[in-house]
Structure formats: C-alpha cells, structure tokens
Length: 206
Image (tube, rainbow, N blue to C red; front, side):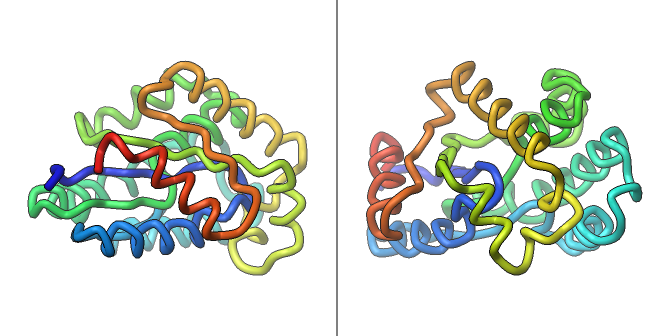
C-alpha cells in the first residue's frame, strides 16, 4: 500500500471544500486507507481557540499582520498536535485549508507579500508541507458563499468582492508556481463528479 500522504484542500469562499473533504475521505477509506480529517484554523485545542479569535468579531479586530501571526501560531499547534503524529502512524491527513490559505489571504489579498508570510510560517512548521494540494475552482464560488450560512458570514469570509478576487488571483499564482504540488480542480457539477476529479488528481499517490 502507498505511504501515508498529507493532502490539503484549498480555494476561495463557497467552492465546497468541506463537502469534498468528507467525500474524499470516504473514498480513500473505501480504498483501504486510514484517514484523519481536520481543518484550519483548528485541529488542536489551542488552534480552535485561535480560530474563534480570528473569525469572530469586527473587521477592525485584527490587521493583516496580526492575522498572519495568529494563523501561524494556530498552524504550529495543529502540526505538532495532530498532523505529524497522524502521519507517523501511517494515516492519511486531509486538511480543509493550510499554508496556502495564509499565502493567498494575508500574503496576497492582505498585501503582506507571499514570501514574507511563507517565511513566517516555515519557522513553526518546518518541513511539514502537503504532498498534494487540491485547489477547488468554481466560477460562482463567491456568489454561493454570500447565500450560505456559517463560515460565509465570518469576519474574513464576509469581506469585499475585490478582496476575494485578490485571493483567487493569489491562489492562481501559487498554482502556476508549484504545478507539481498544487493541482487546480474544477469544482462545478455534482458532488460525485468533483470527488472523482479529486481522486484523479491524487492517482500518483494512491
């Protein structure tokens, strides 16, 4: 059997990451893999506490630099508490958002610079990087996010259309820079169709 892999699902608001995380996990389990699912910010007690600090409250609560630092702290806790131990046990780890979200949101749309945010995060996570990042792309993702409940209403998801356009552009630039790791996946169509595309993008790791 193939070794355990660390897989992240990325994308802008409303592209269906949470739905596909669950569907992909089930598909991998049917193939005989042990799978752990998790999310960011979150995945450990400390990171879940930071999640509330980041996603609740007013837009003015944190600037881009403070956001980047908080995300990096949550990510370090997440890696140490959940991701590294699961991989060491031979389990696949599927994560809803990881480093690339910080690069796109705070680094790109937030204006801090992608490489500055990358350097900040690498101090905490070292070599714990995804084996494959599946970038879900949906032409009406932002519109879908405006009409859903839950995370679409948080202080980051509720930002302006221009901000989220900048996020999408940053994700696109990241995918172009790292085509071996980051694979854009069409998120339109039925849930089953999208899951099949995600599995196709993982075929060399299975």
